Structure formats: C-alpha cells, structure tokens
Amino acid sequence: MQTKVCISVDTEFSIAGAFQDRALLPVAEQRVWCVVDHKSHGLGFMLGCFARHRITATFFVEALNRHYFTHDPMRDIAHHLFDEGHEVQLHVHPCWDVFQHHDWRERARTIQTPGIDDFYRRDEGESLRLIENGLQVFHDWKLPAPTVFRSASLQHDDALYRALARSGIPYSSNIGMAVFDSGDKRYCLYSGRHARHGVLECPILTFCDWKMPGKQHLKSLTITGSSFAETRMLLDQAHRAGIEQVVILTHPFEYVQNRDFTLRQMRRHALNQQRLNSLCKYLNNNRDRFHACGVATAASAPMHHNSSRNLLIQGSLLKTVPRMAEQFVYDKYSNWQLARH
Ligand SMILES: [Zn+2]
Image 1 (spheres, rainbow, N blue to C red):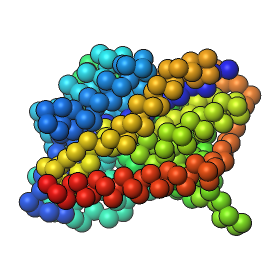
Image 2 (tube, protein in one colour):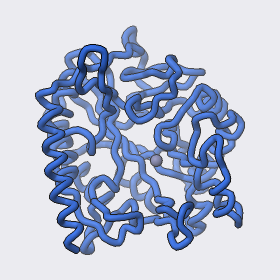
Image 3 (cartoon, helix red, strand yellow):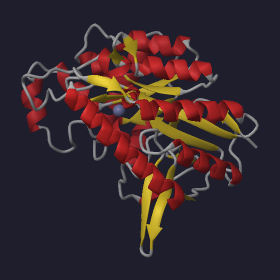
Image 4 (cartoon, rainbow, N blue to C red):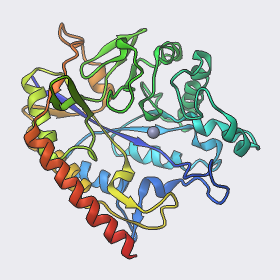
C-alpha cells in the first residue's frame, strides 16, 4: 500500500498590522511571491521544487481578501496554480469580511466574540455565509468548484462542520491538534479520515514529539516545525502503520524571513527551502511507498475498515533534540543577518 502524502499550502495575503496601526496597510502579492533580489523565494521557489520532483500539491487559496483588494490579485495566482496542475481549494479568513464596510478600522477594534478572524464559536449561519462567499469567488474566477475547505488558523467547531455540510463541500482539512484544540473530543483527530455531519475531515498529521510521565507534547506536521530527518521518520512510521494519508501544512512565506509586517526587509529562508526540497526529493525517489497527491484525491478514495483510525504516531527524542538545535542556530544566525541590513 502506498501512503498518500498531501503537501497543503495555505496561500493568503496579510492584514499586516492594519487593524492595530493606522500607518499600516494590508499586503497582497508580496506575501505570496516573496520576491527578494528579483527572484520569488516564496511561491516561485515552491512551484519550482514541486515541478522538479513531479509533486502534486494542494493550494488552499484565500478568497475573501478581494473585499479589500478589489482588483482581485488572487485570481491570477489561483489560475497560475491550477495551470501548473495542482489542486486549488478554498481557504477562508473571516477577517477580510470587515472590509466591506467603510468604517472597517472602527469595526475591527470593537469585534470581540467570535474574534474577527475566528470560525470557532461563530454562528453556523454566519460561517455558511462566509463559505458561500468563498465559493462565489471561485465561480467568478471560472475555476472548478472547490471540494475541500480549510479554515483560518485551523479553527473549527461542530457548527462549522454543519455549515460545511450545508454548503455542499464534501471534504475538509481544518484540524491540526497542536495548532488549535477546540476541547471537543469529537474533533480530537490526529490522523485518518473522519466523517462529521457528512463532511470527511482529513486532519493535518499530529504526532507526539516527546513525552514524560504524565505529559505528552503534541506537534502538527509542518515544514517550518520539523527537520527533514524528523519528517522522513514520521512518513516511514505512517507507512508501516498503514496510515492512508499524511497531510503536511506549509505557507509560501515560510521560505523567507522578515523583520516586520511591512515585508520591506526579507531574505531567503535557506533552512526551510532545504527541508521542502529534501522532502519532495524523498517522495519522488520512494514512489513505491509514497504517492504525493492533492487532499481531494486522498479524501475521495474508497473508505476501508481502518480509514477512520485515529493513530497518534510517537516521534523520537533522537530527532526532536537535533531539530531544536538546528532551528535555534539558524534563527540566531538569521536575526543577526537581518539586523545587519
Ligand atoms: Zn490562513
């Protein structure tokens, strides 16, 4: 059996501090392409890496930002991704909804529960309205209707799944337990595929990276959070355990480093670029065991008796400690480099 590996990329623009500071404004393309010295070190780097190693990925494209960016720059990005043969699916950040109002600065300051960008504790009808707005954007872009949904910051609750079911979207990937835990045991999902209100959830793989008596530490699988050695070990373990698919989370901006919101000072993030490249190369060289594909492809496979197992893979301290050291040294070096400019 091959384990499907779904590299999922949340592709979004940035509020860039505009809600807090009148001097700041949202940032569009540069947050995605991340151009440094005339070269795209964000999305351009990723697409090159995927093409080189023949990887199909899933791009969860944020659709509500056109309330602010009325010239709709995400449309071209979405078409570009689609033309490159990747899955283009729906990502929604509720915070962009406020830009429909001319007094958005005042509103952004006063919105409290749910938080301006939260799906958690949002009214089911309101969540449905936001999802349907997103579907309308894909329709206007003349792209195939998305079949997988990813919520802002992996926030979710039971009402969101009811809203998704009503919207007709069959699959979701809203859960990464180390990123957001709603406290609802029904949504404590580490791996596998799980039907909730008729929507099939494919969580980002969450594993235990270390534990002591009485405490276990969880981590959701991301490029920026795990070394390649750790990711490879987890993939090998997932394959041995018969886990059908592993969903990995990343963003284009993880492949550069910034000093601040304005993105004026940026440099390539060599460590994360190396990690993605090594992962893609490994998947390409081990096609007997792994199949890199989109989330909809993985989600729509026939369900088997063990598809809804919820295994928590145990990582290894032998990988966790070197990863922490690698990260620490690289961050120190990078901050020093950025400070010099
Ligand atoms: Zn996002």
